[in-house]
Image (cartoon, rainbow, N blue to C red):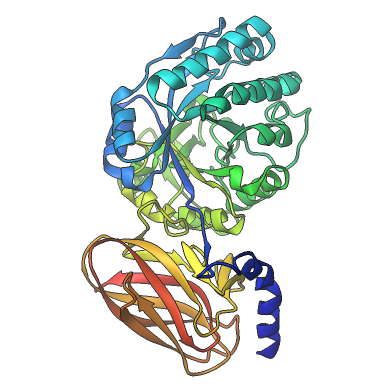
Length: 478
């Protein structure tokens, strides 16, 4: 116990010295970017109208270039207007999508022809200024590996043209675990160079597998983590947005023809399982679900997809790697259950949803505590080095007023500890006795009851006495 207290003094000394002259010594956590990709269809409009409270940012994937550097597409004015009314930051997403796919020849022309390049950048600046966007989401894919330097230079010049007027640049990049300039798919993307000039790097940690490949997870947790580890080794972590897919893929195993494969929206997965009487399975190595079925034409299929458990686990990388936020593809493929799973490990603009689970390290402000790696089930971080008088604030959004059971995941080597939950006014709303679990990483779930009003609010978890660690809180409606 003495050793743990000494370590806390060492680990928090720098933090406290930075705020020594403040009237209150606290550290606040910045809010994550939660970005949804909007596509020009009614499903995206419906998603925005229903799920806007989960979003901080939205990228409208409605534009592409032609070979002259002109912008083709339509500004979704109604969607932008609604987003603005809900304080959602919007980006104009521009791509090199051609007739049926991303066009490498078009990308080469835009990036390397000086006249076309200058015209393209000028048109993007005008698009942003004239339509109320915050900036540009540059989404070029299938870029020739030989255009690596040209891509970095284009993005640099675009950012330099936008920044003086207060506009931002976000670039979407393929996920990769190493930088290989000779790789046909990702070789053109120099993370280090791009990261120096943009505001955000949106890493497309999805489409690990698809109908073009052998069956497998759309976004395996192991592959995602390796990709994010590489990203934060070359780009400041606060600039990195990880990607999550709101879809799965269906492979036809009988024909084994990529053209027979198809995307299955998150919101349609449950009906497909029910219709085919499939039995979902869980791949623990990749934290991804899948199932097999036989279609009416007797062809055999396998579907890899995402569910609430996989999204909850994978969104935990936001906190583990201190990322700038999370992006999702695409609005309209999902339903509200996708967002509820995402926010389990990611604070939302209006606060974490209650009922629901809150990871302890996702506080909005704190005093005196230190995050550390946990050995509890699921891994990640826990809040440790908590002494009497220390606290963590959590922004929450209570969906329904009433009584809740609050589960605390605690570990403690001492008896007699006590947590309190206080409201914004400092009123004690609930108390919890902390048991001796046998050690700082020996975990036990204990609970108490609390009555909460509806709406957004801040709850403070305050330690009266004891020396516990805290991994998560879970609010369950009674």
